[in-house]
Amino acid sequence: MEAIISFLKTFGAVVTAAALNWFLPIKTFVAVTLLLVFADLITGIQAARKRSEAIHSRGFRRTALKFAMYCTAIVSAHGIEAVYFPDFPMVFTISAYVAISEFWSILENVGTVTGVNVLESVRGRLSEILKINQK
View: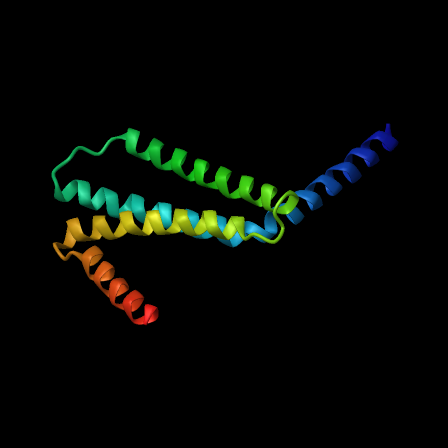
């Protein structure tokens, strides 16, 4: 019986080490995604209050589902990148798209709450930068 328990402990340690080895390279992408989704939730609640909209559990469920789907996309991209496209930064690309879309939503919510259209300011400044870089 002790041999079985020893084997299970060793097996558990190996599986844990392999999982950590797999997830550690993408921990920052997942953490930033969590931070942005949470910020979108907070700013979204404030924007809904500003518009006098009802706040209910469906929105919280949507946020949890959104985070789960984003993480699924990041982990899947990590697997595809590791196996099929080691020279293409797939995790970075997917995570950047997620981050930009969440950031966009945050700026829209901030604009609703404050009345300052931060989104247009950022869009205008980015256009200026792109025009300068294209010359």
